[in-house]
Length: 251
Image 1 (cartoon, rainbow, N blue to C red):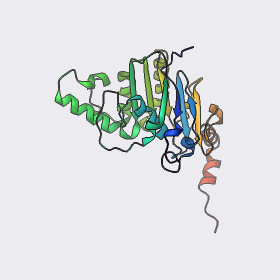
Image 2: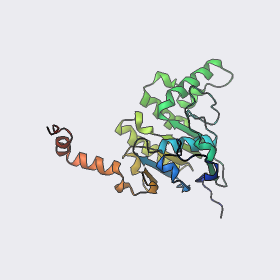
Image 3: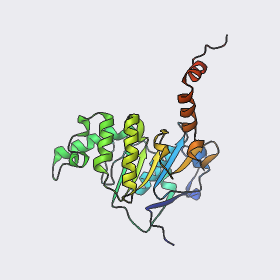
Image 4: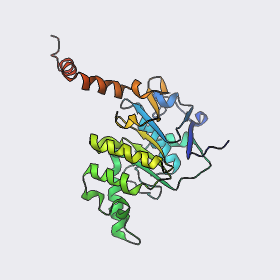
């Protein structure tokens, strides 16, 4: 039976990898990767810094046809070619349906996307792109406001959305609002793959959470993520946690 989700799974074509001791193939998560099945609605990638979650998400985005620095598939600018060659060794299994919308959000390079939007609007030749983001230049907003303008105005539903650490510029309150908007878009036939450190976002019900660690990539329950356990323990016992963290070093 053919799947109706947009992106079904990711396969590492190991025969195309020349050297598993070279970056990014030396990363534990990549070296152990075979086939990774995605949730029809929301899939999360979690793990320590440097575990490979953003590297894999970026490779998925480039293999799908997105600009490595972010944006929709219509963006083709480049300010700094820093993406890895991993996308060349990936095979994406696509569903029967094609998404009508799509976006790759990278927190670290969203400034470059905003600059490209302003540049294209200054050149003219069509309706201003900023109208799709609420009508105001993203550079005329705070970092968090520009992220939220993207969520509320640019994403139209029936889309494949790849987000790399979208919580980076969002307050806890805005992260809660993002959960609500994410749910609206899921109900409009959208699919998300999100690399995140946010225990708030990870709480989205029925999502598939993949943990990236030294053993590779494995599915994990929300309550078993370090993000949930560490945050819970700190909020339940802040003084005890601070006493341990700030204790003087032993002579």
